Length: 97
Image (cartoon, rainbow, N blue to C red):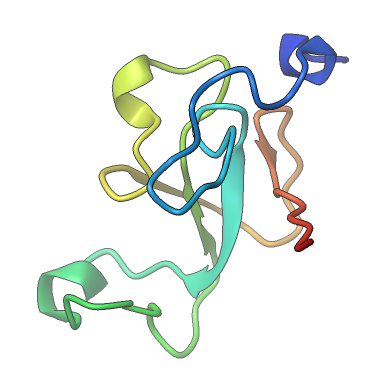
């Protein structure tokens, strides 16, 4: 299924504070972190990396088919197994110039 986001040109909106475009709301983004239900209650506030092991990985950023309130990478987490497939989950490719 080709999503609407695949047909939209990049860079239509203003960049975020780090100069990056189109970082929220296109797909839930895979993170390297393992998911732990209570990890963030006791984690460091700067750059928490998740538990050392687990069964499911963290997803952040919301998807094109979700509520706007779920497109904050700092505010909403989801999780899926590393081998799961889902049309609203992916990753971002970044290029440095």
